[in-house]
Image: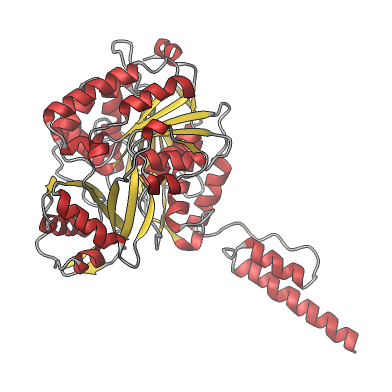
Length: 505
């Protein structure tokens, strides 16, 4: 009888755990397998495939993301780096004695009141922004108050340093970082990131990252999305002081990929200095040996003249690849009279067809062609709910995996998980969209089981994927840099730059 009861109990336990596999497929598999094996019930059953749209999409990504045939070995990144002080924006502004007034954007912040107005302006839109704070003493007072704040955290900051840090997570890659690196930043960097002695300085540059959560309220303002507002009084990065060090380090380091960022930091500089540094940048890029692709990562800007100069003064034709978000894309189009430039801002989720039109225009007007001396053949666009990789045909491979990998890292990094947890993310991309409005575009219906959608237009290929948005993000800073780094990591250049010139449309 005892033996019968033991067998019956084991059977009931097996049935119960089997039901867990069937009814809770999103539970970590390792936990279920551990429970099963601890009961010594034999081989664990295989749980059914994910049933939620988020689970199906994540599984489809995993199947699509494959390593490129030729991988980068040495990546050089420059030239902006700093320490990010990350904390709650609302709590800091309250601690500074500020109250929510009328939200208003400021191209440059001159006071704490300007900071409060700009912060609530972007918080109400759920949009990211970055601004220069002109008053040195006032900024240092805010930095001191922020650093002493109980919840303040210090992280690697600056697009170049963040991209370098992401690349350094791959142990088989060697990473060179040139930027103003102080003692705190040097301590925070991965051991796999090499900083030349000329880049080291005695004092860190600090950027304040004021975060807010989706649904967070302050006075009459309510954030529709989690995001952040960034500001600094950063003179070293603003003058791109490490550009010459960066270029001089390349000959010895011998990279097979170069990543540049930090041009937006020049907004606090005079027009004369901006023009001078842009010309020096173009000269420096031209000194990089042929065959080494150069990726330019853009960031939030308000100076239309500076953006127009970046587009027209040979910077775009000198680089091979661009990375940017929805704010930067629309601002670029407005500054250079591109498609849909009459829009003052995006109304909620950026329209896929409009984004596609602007990406097409950039590559057609400023990208590689037989009639134009340009190396630009690739743009990686990212917004909260979807990404698009646009490439001139014949120059890049493995872009389907690259766009999927960039979207996947957006979900894992925001949620601070090693893999996508379907219960912690949401599929918020448009269910249907048009691929273009400038021509007769196609209507696409999103299918989570085949998340990457491809279309072509006059020799340019587009790869679209939805993003799984973290419901309660741990940290939003640096997501764009991580997305671009991951997309580049999985990308493959087809031949050298000189070879690609022969293939231009």
